[in-house]
Image 1 (cartoon, rainbow, N blue to C red):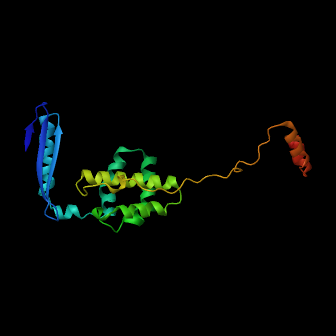
Image 2 (spheres, helix red, strand yellow):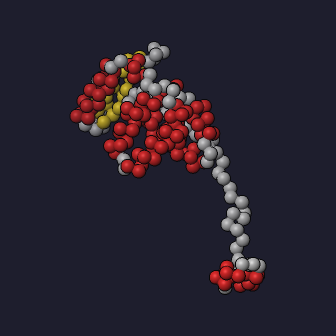
Image 3 (cartoon, rainbow, N blue to C red):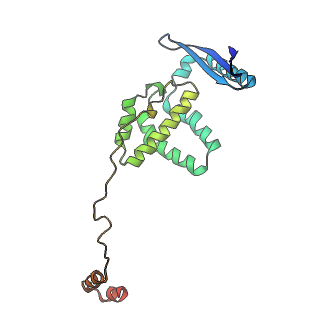
Length: 191
């Protein structure tokens, strides 16, 4: 159903059926033109017409291979896609390949982040998972992105005070250091 609002825009409402628990599903969006409204209504009506049970039960690995990666390969640079594929292969598929998209829970994402060695690896893994689940929301496979929540990331690794060695800041310190060198060849190069 398309309605014109008081601001001159068009509101599209489409009944998508019912979920597995019997709750009514309805998509609503406001767009600026009638043409966009008709296109959106047609797209949502087609989605509602297809078998909702099949759409609701897509496995994570199937969604990544059928929807996410082909879309990213069209729109992103080669090195970016290569990095996403590496992250998916190394961390996300071992954790989620056997799960359905709607069965990925907050505790699963936290377990994934806890298994990462560094804070940076955990952040990258969460960001890629968040992109995948955002696309799944757009296609109607999930209703909420669990990767968008706040999570405890691994602690930042703090380097010890002497990780850069000892700094020699005066000529006296330089002379003292050179005097301690035993190797004549190195001493010649240092002086």
